[in-house]
Length: 424
Image (cartoon, rainbow, N blue to C red):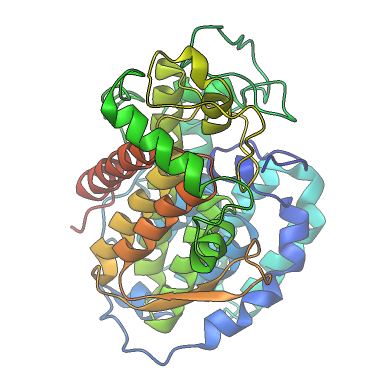
């Protein structure tokens, strides 16, 4: 599914199907998440962490954005240093951490979306109303604005203003990506060169090449997706069809929703929540960058093209079907690796680093049928596996592409946690 609304400048939210203004109107919708604290709490790491995490969860509902969450982390951390900072090394232990986190998010978003300032101002006013008036609040707001300025300056020339449609021209060779109807372009080709947040470079964990077209591995992947991923396939179970739709939404939206749900249920403190969402959105962003690097490097065709053009692939085990359609619409970018799968495993690694992998949760999806129905999982890794599996059942990825994506995502997630925002 391609975003048809105003595109966000910063990477993870560039795919968001709503603008910040629309999302802010739904901030009240996170009330159930913020009040569901039945599970055991996580021990605070500092006095700032003893404060409620509402400031982080509320702004995350409005914007799933690495810049916002890095600014919030650095601002909150500056009031009671417990973790490494990312862009801002200032300190003010007399500043209110909730005011600092709210002001940081507000400053990033109003700079990026000046037309949305009235709605953002209202959200900030509501956040500050929960903070006692006085010097600590004033100093917190100032600190948050400084943290926002630092991350905005650091990322000012990161390449994230890339156009949606670039100069990509498909090659006619078998195995090469071809535009997928109804699209006549490859989506955001410039993403492959964006400066990562956590990784040293986009190709740091580039996966090995996909299977050769004349190999058994390719034929096996082809046969599976052709049979189970076809629109109306009887080889797909009702549950497989259900989770193909459930996970179809933009991956960063779903995994941020999972994080909000678990952070609220576990009563994670303000500072730990700020760090969690900063790490999460750094990893999600870099999984996109690393995935796009590999996609454009290997330029591999999607199943819908492969099945229709199978007579050209040189593999006697792949029979063509000129009328084949995928169960869900095929996104306008190359197949290998599956970035949807990469984002899922990157997010699962970050979440497991904070809560442990064996963490049960239930969450909903707007692309589920019926809409906003729920699925439950015993582990983050279980959810990541189903997230990847869904792309095969949807008919939009080969299994070898989802496997490569999962491996890429795990490496991105582990690297992010190991090298950034570490506990002091």
